[in-house]
Image (cartoon, rainbow, N blue to C red; front, side, top):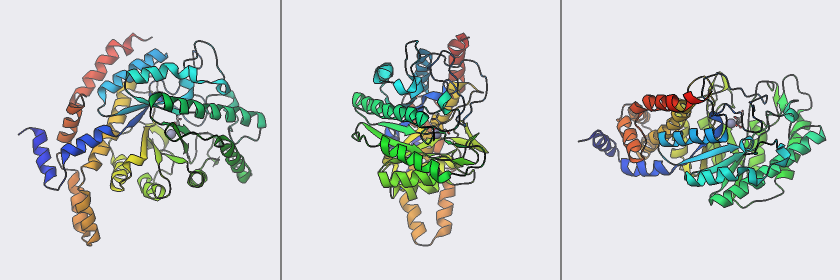
Length: 416
Ligand code: RNT
Ligand code: ZN
């Protein structure tokens, strides 16, 4: 018997069919964020770098992608190292601007044409994000909620164009492009007119969503946040703000795992939100003490999120996007480990004997429910994961270090 056959038998004892789980898992899309490859720099200027907005990439590991071509090459390497269906999540600042500076309120479809063709060649679909940071007009901490009408108009125009571009991408690729909107708006010190700023943001959103796009072209997600560096005292787009806005306006919420109090259980929010909203976008991240955007690992928090999506039967209504950026280690390795961790968590969740667990729970057999959950950790999960990698043409866990080192030597090492 092969390792996989042993595992298949072990799970079958609990009524879980590993073959059909592997099939289902392969089809769940994970949207790979482009910004792990260049520390959220983008390509607006030759020396574009992440600035402001309360997010930070730390580290100076060599080999970062400095051109669109390099970033694509790195993403292709990532595709070869992660099993399952991938999408790619682009930020507006990653357009191909052809050597000239294009203001954010002037972006157009044509700057993303190259990405659409590249995505087609690589058999991936694209998602999109407006870029509301690393810009002088975001420097005073407000964009769509700004009391400066000129600043607000600038960002309104940016967002309207992002939605139009997302819809165009969706049409081109025959799959809805998820547009995530995260704005940094907030205050470092005491905020007095909170109601005023939130009213302005609501007004801006209402204006933005006046234009409707078909759901098979693009869908909007609004990303909530607790605080950022420089917005410790007040964030306009808080969880409550967007949760209400999304539910009343049929928009999606984006829950970033780093955007809550560190002890909050993100997984517990899903059933409450998905009961009222049709869909959700996740930004899967690993906050360490704060919204630090560490590489996602196969840990309890991520397993709990995956379990909740599977147990609730809402997996297909969740759009899974990754959001982390670590500049202190090999960036390809960081990407690969994070995306594979998410995929592993989904596999772990799909392998649970859910019906049996529910039966124990319903019949008041709390101990059996607990013991069966505990048993999941010692089931031959690794054999099933290896088989998934094999079936999807990706390397095994044990092969990764060498492959990432090889790419570093051959490709990253050649970049100055
Ligand atoms: C910031 C948000 C946002 C960004 C990306 C780059 O706190 O998480 O999603 O990380 O847009
Ligand atoms: Zn995020």
